Amino acid sequence: MKLIIQIPCYNEENTLPEVVRDLPRQLEGIDEIEYLIIDDGSSDRTVEVARELGVHHVVSLGSNQGLAAAFMMGIRSCLELGADIIVNTDGDNQYQGGSIGDLIRPVVTGSADIVVGARPIEDIAHFSWLKKRLQRWGSHIVQRFSGTDVPDTTSGFRAYSAEAAMRLHVFNRYTYTLETIIQAGHMHMRITHVSIKVNPKTRESRLISSIPRYVRRSGSIILRSYITYKPLRTFFYFSLLPALAGLAICLRFLYFYVSEQSASGHIQSLILAAVLLIIAFLLLSLGILADLMSANRKLIQEALFATRRQMYQNRDTFDKAVSDSTKESDVPVKPDPSQN
Image (cartoon, rainbow, N blue to C red):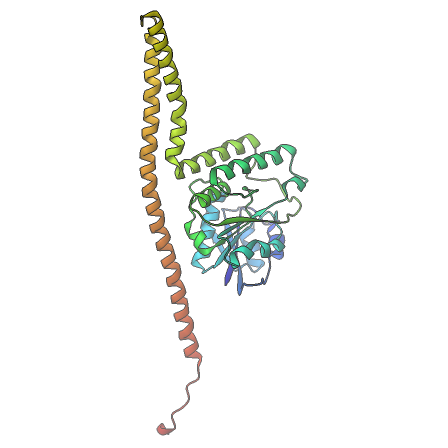
């Protein structure tokens, strides 16, 4: 079984040596361990340092495209390299490499497809009170939207089986953490979590440069992801407000019409009610159309997964054939005595 540990990096020349030195060289149930660096357009010596450290693979995006793009490039590269299990960790040395054994164990035993490393949020000294609360609230919202029980949904310390990795699709460019959990939950993947240890802070987070901005972008990602997988339910909820308001105004109009035996003076209310009910109808119609598009998206995702799996399996067959041919060529040929 082959494990590849991928590390998305953007200007991590100072922290990368500690990260790589802390990674395991051997683990129970794993035959081969390799490291892969995804260079997200670094302007420092990240790539040179990675090569000096003996990292097995370095993939470069060419320019700074964001954490989500770097993560997905790493996933694709790991699959092409024949990984059976993929671990993602950060280049800022936030997570302890010694926890990787615990992280991959559910995948090795076949009890989970995705494992998320849950940090001890309340015990992290450099997290402010507000950040701790936002982490808890945000994780609770993602749990509700995804139907999972992962307590630390923003943790980037994760393990994926090869098949789970083949199913991943990240559409936003900001971060992969929230979207992939919601996606995994709605695709009925087996996702669990294990407790992990973290290292002292090495630098300020580049992802959370401003808490209001982070909350806004994270909220947008959660809502968009939920709409992608539950469009009809989402638009139904959106249509409830104008529908209920329109019905209430209609009842008000009927009340005055019956009690006063006249509709004069209340025509404006009737027009407003009609507009609100039309809006509700349009929103519900959008939900139906989005649901039909969602069905097509699922078919496309399944077709893409089947293609990826076939390519992955064919790669294994090709590698085995090459290995067998190499072994045969290494066998010494005994001379035929009859030709002497």
